[in-house]
Structure formats: C-alpha cells, structure tokens
Amino acid sequence: MSPQFPATISADQKNMIFENMSDGVITLDSDGTITYCNSASLEILRISSKKDVLGQSFKELFMNNKKNKAFNKLFRESIDKGKVMPKTSIRYRFGKEKEVHYFNIDISLLKPSQTELFDPDADYNPDTGFNGMVILIEDDTDKYKLRQHEHDCAFIFAGLILCISVFLMTWSLLQFTLHIYLKSSVYTQIIECITFLLFLVIVFMTSFSMRDIGLIPRKNTIKKTIVESLSIAAVASCILLFSKAILMLLGYKIKDYYIGGSLSGVYTYVFTAFVQEFLARGVIQTSVKSLMKIRFQKFFSIFLTSLLFSLMHMPFGFYFMMSAFLLSMALGYVYERHQNLWGCVFLHWCCGYLAMCLYF
Figure 1 (tube, rainbow, N blue to C red):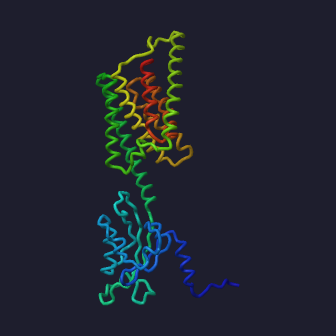
Figure 2 (figure 1 turned 90 degrees about the vertical axis):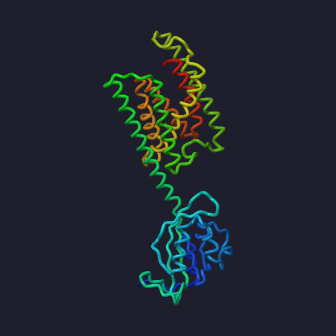
Figure 3 (figure 1 turned 180 degrees about the vertical axis):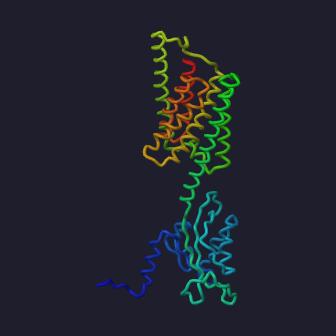
C-alpha cells in the first residue's frame, strides 16, 4: 500500500521548512517591505530580532551603505527595473566594519497573483510593476576565505621555491664555474633580502593577517611562550657548552674559546633571527601546513620547512647546514605549540649565536 501524502502543505509546515533551512529566506511585497524572514537570515545579516525587520523597507535597512555597490545594484535592478539576475556572489560590509563578507544571493520576482514565480525570459511590463520577491541568501564567507587562504599559500610557496632555486643556482655559478668566493655575510644578506621581499608580497598581495603569520601572539599563549622559551634556551645552552667541553677533552680540533663575536654581532643577529624565523615559520611552515591535507600534516610541514631552510645555508658548509636543519626542526615544534614567532626568534637568537661562537 503506497504512503499517503497531504495534498497541500499548511502554513505551519511551510514555516517549519523555512526555519530549518541553512540559507536565509526573505520575502518582500510590492512596496519593497519585508514580509517574512527566517532565523538563518537573521543570523547571516546580523539582526537581533524579526521585529527589527518585519514591516520595514528593504532599501532603507540594507541598501544605504555606499561601499556595497554590487549588492545595491543587484537589488535596484530587480526592484526598480524588474530584472532577474542569475545566482550571484556579492561582497558585503556591515556598516563601517573593515571585514568583508561574501553572500550567494538568488532572487525570484513574483507575478501579480503572488502564487507563481516571475518568468525571467519574459519582457518586463511596466504596467505590472514590481510585485514582490523571494530572496535566498547563502553565507559563503568561510568557504571563500578557505579558498583564498589556499590560493595565497600556493602563491607564496611558488615564489619561495623560485627564490631558493635562483639563490642556489647563483651560488653554484659563482662558486664552481666563475670561482668567485663571497663572504658568508653576503649570503646572509641575500637570504634577508629574499625574506623582506616575501614579507612585502604577503602584506600587499595576499589576505594573510599578522596573526596568521605569527607576528601577533594570542593573549592566552604569551605566558606559556615566555616560560617555555626561557626553559628551552637554558637547557639548550647547557647542552652546547657541555658538548663543547667534551669534544675538546676528546681532542677534536674546534674553536679553543667559549665566547666570540662582538656586541654589534649580537645586535645584528637579533635581526637575522627574526628575519629567518619569519621566513621559516611564518612563510614556509604556514604555507606547507595549509597546502598538505594528509596524515601527520604538522610533522611533514616541520620536516619540509627544515629541509628547505637548511638548503638555503648550503653555501656555509655541510655541518652548518645540518645544524640549521636540526635547529629548524626544534623551532618548528615550538612554533606549533605557541602559534607565534617570538619564542622561536628568541631561541634562534640565543642558541644560534651561542653555537656560532662555540663552533663556527
């Protein structure tokens, strides 16, 4: 026996269907007055209560912001000229907010009978005029930001690979073909220039915020960052000093003093540590982790970041390159714990400069 379905749907059933939709539903009458809106539309358009919109003019409520040019034009074409546009993705700002939202809007105009949808292929009859509309609004902001974030990561990573390739090819040409030997400080400056160039790209050509690349720490992680960074720095410094003493006792020929460098070197290395951590953690690790949708995502992002970072230190020799790889692995783990660069910058400066004074 086939199931029996009701011939018509009651008003309560229609209301229940609309209230359970994830898309916003708004209806206007022939005067452009809002006659219905479901709960999803209130959330999407940031309206506290239906009482604030029912019986109000749609134009006066949502079409006063001159920054929403595309949004205003879409509804003017429909309300004033009776045109039906295809489903459209629109940028929208709430008041004076800087944050942009993205809505997919689908509009259907009503015939005079209010029972059938307007035929988009039929010519507009000025005698009939505007007879109301049904508006479907989908909030696509999160999906748009995710797509934009992945696009930015791919763009940055491609630029990074290009920079590293040119850097290594230039070094190989100078070192092995032209036999031009540059000071190690020159290569350091080249790396810093590459980093500054990528910083400009991120700031002016992507949607990344300062928090996304670890420059602005979260308040609830500041204390943890300070405590853990100081503890790790103390342990790492003791290990470096102890290993130096052991190697000297065993007769290995390395630097015969424990301290080195100068105060100007200390100050300079602060800038170097910041620049290199921004490159390694803020650029490479962030981009790789966002692009790799695999198991052990964080581990592979740390490993690949450390590998690329060590390759950029190839002109300094194999041991220096391997030291950079191990330090980068440790700092990558710290970055994942703290989600900001500052603990990594301090550890890089402390451990890296001490290691150079002791060994290199």
